[in-house]
Length: 224
Image (cartoon, rainbow, N blue to C red; front, side, top):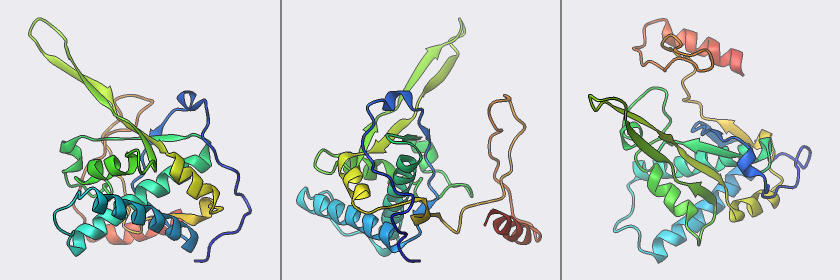
C-alpha cells in the first residue's frame, strides 16, 4: 500500500486540556498499513536501538522470535498512539501493567500485550527518547469488613504521544488510512453475561470447533 496523501491530515500538537480527555483502552491490534507509517515506526525502532546500545541495556541480542515480538509491540504502541492523536489532540490510552495478565495466554491477546511490554514502555518514555508520556497506574487494597476481607481497586497506566513522536507525526502527514489492524486479531468474541448495563461481560476463552474457522472468515468479511 502506498502512503496516503495530505488529505485529512491536520496539524498535531500537545493539547493543554488533556486531563479533560478520558483515556480509552489501548488497542494492541494496531499495525502499519502504509509505507509512510512503516517508515515512522522504523524511525522509532532505530532510536530505541541506539538507546539500548548506548546504555548497554542488553547483554546479548534478541533471538529472531523475541526480536519479532519486540518490533510488533513497538509498532502496536506507536500505531495506537498515533491513531488516538488523530482521534483527538492530546488523546491518551490506558493499558494494564499487571504481570499476571501480561504473562497469561489468551486468544484475545496480541503479542503487544506480552511480558516485555513494561520494559519497552520504560525505554519509549525515557527522557532521551520522549516517544511516549507515561503516567504509572496504581493499585489500592482496602479492608472491607471486620473479617479482614480485602477489596482491590486502582488505575491502569496511561500513555500519550511524547514530544518526539508528535514531531514525527507532524512531519509525515499520517492519516487514519495509514493504520491497520493485525490479521490474527480474534473477531469471534465470547462473553460472560453482563454484571452491569454500562460494561460488557468478561471475555471467555473457548476451543475451536469445525465451524469456527468458517464463521471467523464470515465475520472478517463483514468487518472489512
